[in-house]
Image 1 (cartoon, rainbow, N blue to C red):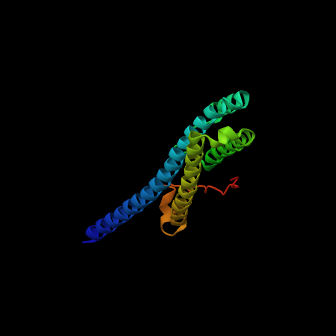
Image 2: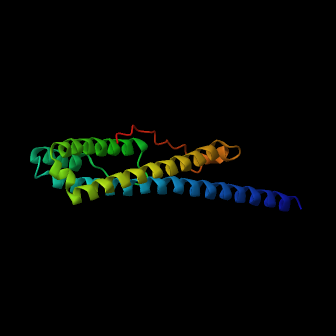
Image 3: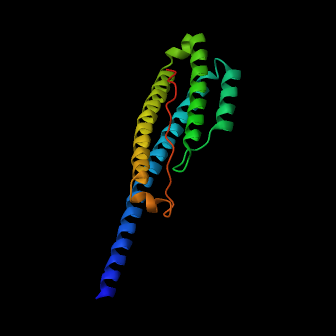
Length: 176
């Protein structure tokens, strides 16, 4: 009878550990998925910026080429495991590029009135809004995971299972 009780207690502990690991894995995957979504939207934003830069070539070829080269050399893919600092760096590149495109557009009214220019400026704006929404989802997912990691009894096993606190995506200044 004693072995049965010990065996049942051990089985309950193992099941409890499995339950904690599964819950944390799901939460961690939500954080990774949210970061991946940010990456997709940033990539789409870069694509729209590249089209805008191609449109500015006829007006300010040197400026356009310089920005295209900057994007090519500094753009990196944001993946599920990317750090928030990487996202911030990519957003800074987008912001700087967009500001410089707007300066060129102010100098050339024909460019501002171009239908394709307007369409891609709207696309950039839409992607930026989606990134902001995805940031909220990411930070909410991080909050849930970090809160769970701090709760007893989960905190006893979280490190053993390889789960650690995640960093938040801090707010950036809105330049629009």
